[in-house]
Length: 370
Image 1 (cartoon, helix red, strand yellow):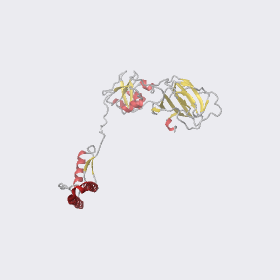
Image 2 (tube, helix red, strand yellow):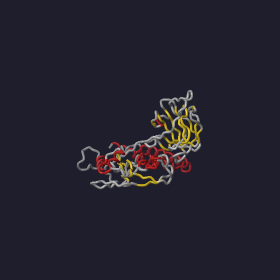
Image 3 (cartoon, rainbow, N blue to C red):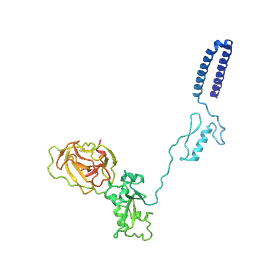
Image 4 (cartoon, rainbow, N blue to C red):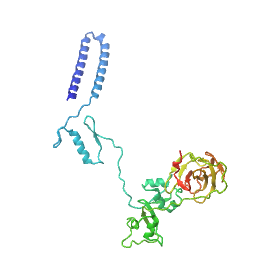
């Protein structure tokens, strides 16, 4: 009520000012030729200043919305617009339009730029064709499954997780687990034991279409094993057995071996990080130590250098090299160039496969790098 009275007074005051300015202009019109230029400019300036002040004053006032009659059943003294808003929000539910009240009681629509699309389970096994820059991790993210599931559903990927080729087709399961091809000696119990699940998990899986009461499995058929896991088998290379060079010992603090972006991270089937870089880029020793292996391997690493840091059981692997610049038994210091980035062995493109092992157990390199 007080705000409306204030608004009326301000409007009457503005009208009086404009009327006075008009009267002054008429009185000055007696000497029209002499006063006209000065009066017109003065009045124009005064009108502009007055209107500006009035507009600022009006904008600073929070005008209340007209109160609507309270709906039947509303609490006396309650905000009718607020009650209606709460009722509308309840009717829409949590997924309905988002609204709110301004300080003046106005109902406004809040901006919601994102459309929520519910996740729906895939109802069948599908095939995906590998694209440029794909890794097991990116494919798994695309289908909202674990990277291990992609690996355990595709023997070729399991043998060489680093080696994906453009155009290669991979089987994608509708849930996390493994994909098993039945052999002549297999039973539901033996398959379940191999993947560490209960036989009922395989028997009751709708994707297997096994019929009661016998649930017969046929040789050559593929079975989805929900939640199934397979043991991880690390790859090893021959270690240097000669004398350790004098003073060849690291500090335990590792530096990045090459400058580049991580193209594949550390996960169950890839216990290393891949650092993408141009072929021929210098690969540096992450810490001091001695070279325990340098050369070609037949287990997927291609050209590899292994450095024993002689500190707290730490050993680092530098794989898929195009060139090797050190030899077994050689002492190295942190930052020494030991090789060049390449794509040898089971590798899709130029990158450095970098592993950290402590007492023979593979570690996440990110835990040791700055």
